[in-house]
Each structure stands twice: as structure tokens, then as C-alpha cells.
Amino acid sequence: MRRLLLALSGLVLIGVAGFLVITDPAFFRLIRGSSPAAPAEPANLANGRTMFFAGGCASCHATPGQPDRLKLGGGLPMHTPFGTFHVPNLSPHPRDGIGNWTAEQFIVAMREGVSPDGGHYYPAFPYTSFQRMGGKDLADLLAFIRTLEPVEGRAPAHEIGFPFNIRRSLGGWKLLHLDGRLQENVALRSTEWNRGAFLVEGPGHCAECHSPRNALGGIVTARRFGGGPDPEGKGTVPNITPHKDGIGDWSKQEHALFLKTGETPGFLSVGGSMRSVIRNMAELSDADRLAMGEYLSSLPPVAGKPAAAGK
Image (cartoon, rainbow, N blue to C red):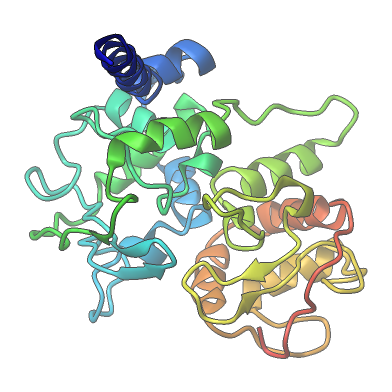
């Protein structure tokens, strides 16, 4: 019996040690590689502004209940099957926001989901898409955020039950769902297509809402962009692939017009949270919206639930 207890104790210790190793951010970097460093050259604020609106930062981080979408005090509650997340302050406030963050800390947070104090962020923050962005685009984004008004106050703590409140376990989740790869150009594709791929897969994080999720909350790769349950539990998010269940044969011009106005080729107006997305996409250049249309039109068709009218 004593030997059995010693053996069991040893297995427990090995298990705990293994858990601590594989859930450490340093282990993730060892397996996936480190994020790119911040560039030495001056920031491009125009590009930072584009990344800000392509990423829809204001849609989640703007302080609720006030009209200025550039006051990024956070506080928006996001209701999910795993609990309620309260979006943090993203303003350049030195205490309550990210005003004291370095560019390197910002890049690691955006690409690896790791806070400056070394803790894991929950993937309600879509770093699984932001990992496709490089150091230059992220440094430009931070520079643009620093031009905005600092907002005092912090969001409430997340309301997450056991076992999802064990943040350390997110290190294991990342090994399954975070690959650390940058978005790379495809040589056989046009410059426009590659720009669209970057905007859709990276800052635009379109797949985060328009894809079904597995039991752990990761995107089901085989049905990426094929629509699925709303992450906040309110109905469904439509299929945006060129399948008859999705957008069908929309041209890139029709995509671009939709992203600017929120009106479909069938003269239906967008509804729900997509209205906020359209407000962001309307701030992009015509060329960027056309590039996104070029890429979206090329997606593999995926069968899924058809979009409801006005969604």
C-alpha cells in the first residue's frame, strides 16, 4: 500500500509539473517561436488608424452609454457559454488603460494573448486572428491608440465559473488553437488578394464570429467562415462563404459596397452587431474594401445555415 501511495503521489507530482510547464507562456514561445520585435522606424499613424478600424477596436472597447466611439474605457459585457467577460480599458490611461505599455508588451498581448504581467488572456480577445499581424502594423496601431483620450476607470472582473476561471489552463488551449504564424503572401495570388487575405484573417478577425466552435471554444477549421451560433448566444451568425447557404456569388464590388453601407445586393440592411462592424469598415479605403471582397469571393464554399433577412 505504501508503495502504491508513493507511486500515485509521484504521478500526481509529474502531472502537476507537466501542467505548469505546458501552460507557461515561455513554453508556448519555445514551441511556436517568439513574436516579432517592434520596428525601429517611426510609427505610421495613418496605417495605425486603418488597423484600428479594420480590427473593430471601438466596437468592443468603447465605453458603453456614451456617443464617442474613440473613448476606449471598456466595460462592455460579453455573454458567452463560458461566462461573462467584461472588455478592458484600452485607452492610453497610464493606470487603468495601456498607457504605460511598451510596444513589445502590446505585440505580445495581441499575438500571444499574454499580459505584461505574464498572465494569459481569455480568447474572447481574438488574438488567434491578431497573431497574423506583424510588428510594424501592431506598433502603428499602438501609436494611433496613444493619440486618443485617456479614460479613467477599469472594467469589472470577469464572471467565469470553474474550471474556466483557471487562467493557467489557457496555456494548454493555446497549444491547440494558436499557431503563432504571421499572415504570409501567396506568390500565385494578386497583391489585392493578399491584402484582402491579411485584412480578413488578421485585424478584421472575420472568422472569429462567422465560424462554428468546438466544445473548447476553438474554431472548427473544416467549417471556417461557414456560420454558426452567435458567440454571445443570441441566434446565429451567417455563412459568408460563396455557398448557396451563404453569400452565393457576390462579386468583390458587392462585398465592398456591403462593407461600406451595410446593404446587401438584395437590398437588405445589416442588423445586430454587424452594424457596428460596418461603421468600422466604412472608415477603410475603397481599395481595402475591394481587396477584402476579392478574398472573401475566393473562399472555399462551406455548407451552413443560410443568413436570415436583415442579418
